[in-house]
Length: 141
Image 1 (cartoon, rainbow, N blue to C red):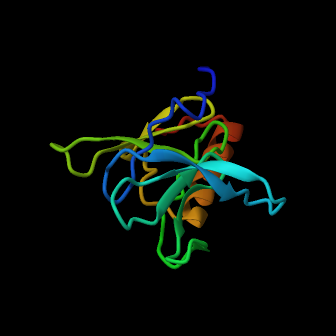
Image 2 (image 1 turned 120 degrees about the vertical axis):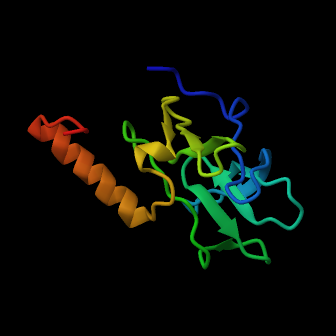
């Protein structure tokens, strides 16, 4: 299993604009303990899409607070449940998306059935895979 990449080695893309996101300090930790965490933000002007290693993708409202009025991808790694980031698109195959886990380095594509899942769909998919692996079934059959 690959070692976790440092936060400076990640190259997440904005899922809406497909632009590389930049690392920015200064956002409050979601734990509410007053500490700050590093967050990636889209380089498209006026884009409120953000990504961090613990929450995955999220939106900021115009006043800078976290907003959840728009649906954001909640794609998690099948190995360690970490939130994946969009790492690659293919302009020739418009629907192709490659997602990478910041923890273990695993790569998943939308062909794995992961793209566009809501949090609940992702949890259901993960539970289904866990049940299959516990029963000894293979993913294909």
